[in-house]
Image (tube, rainbow, N blue to C red; front, side, top):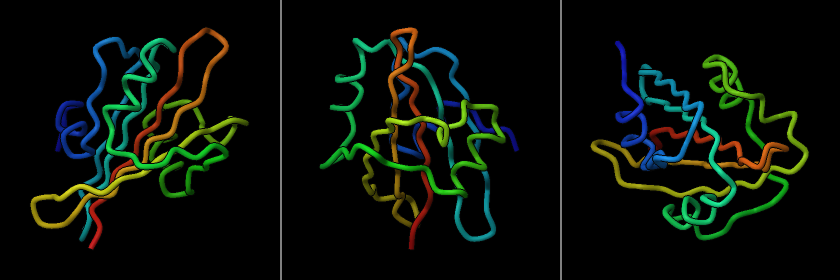
Length: 125
């Protein structure tokens, strides 16, 4: 089953900004729960607007990507977030069709003046 980046974005409740480049996505239709992954680079100037568009109550520096999510990002060819020394992450929950969806968004500044963004979302009981 092929799933578009727009469908992954809707599932994760994370809009991909129009200024985003190198957009990558993956979707896994699981036995019980579905998983979605997004990755893109965003100009540093657009990062605050992107962050404020998400219903995250607290961003935390020194965040990490769990191994299941890391596999998803690496499988779709996204940059490896485990090699980033300064990762900032935030999470939120949204109602879904059958189950709520837990979404985590992380970002890190890059030397070229962009921010790399990683998003993972999963249905939760």
